Image (tube, rainbow, N blue to C red; front, side, top):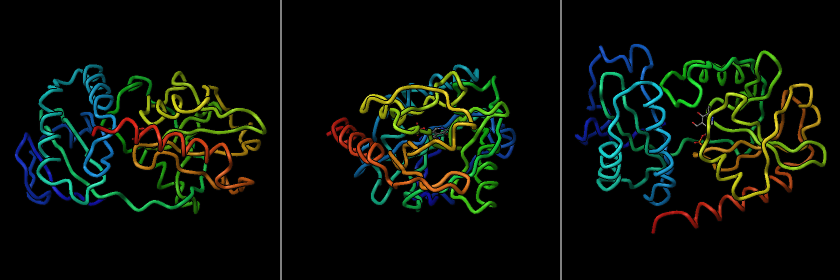
Length: 262
Ligand SMILES: Cc1ncc(COP(=O)(O)O)c(C=O)c1O
């Protein structure tokens, strides 16, 4: 990612000159919360949902959090210069720093080759989008070492979960579009909610034993909306993107356009 402009506690400037204290436990322990919000021509998508999730994350983490101030600083940063930015990242640290970064969109492959990586979700962090993302980043690195684009995280008990930074949707044989339930200890992704609202997708757990019968799959995320999967552990999907994935991508695209602020 490339940051274009930064705000720390409301002071806006170049990212290289943005400063926080080295004793901040946000840095020392990954103790804090964050959100990444997509900008479409400078317009943030679903900012209310992101602020609500961030407020909830902070409450559960026992982190002091002023939602109105964080949101006002986000809007001020966007108003100062969202040209060329695709995302705004918001962080609040244990040290009390409010950070906002305007970032360009990262380069993403057209389709995703996945490698399954075993990962045990940290129960106490359920429902919290915390800054402790070292394990998620490692999962992607381990998958890339195997030649894949990203990791499909699976539990030690053989449940398919999600990606390190995206939700997972799948179609089994000629079944319906499905996604693992939140009870499987995955993030309550905002894009996942919009896919569920825009399609007839349903929640259903998936086991690793069933992965060989997955006919279509996609990732859902703020960054890329619907992102087709082309292979899982070296097994190619028969059609990429498949018809269900294409229909979901179009439905989500239309929903996002319809919900964007004027
Ligand atoms: C673990 C995880 N799952 C799913 C997602 C997708 O969530 P959203 O749609 O809110 O971007 C993210 C986003 O960062 C994530 O970190």
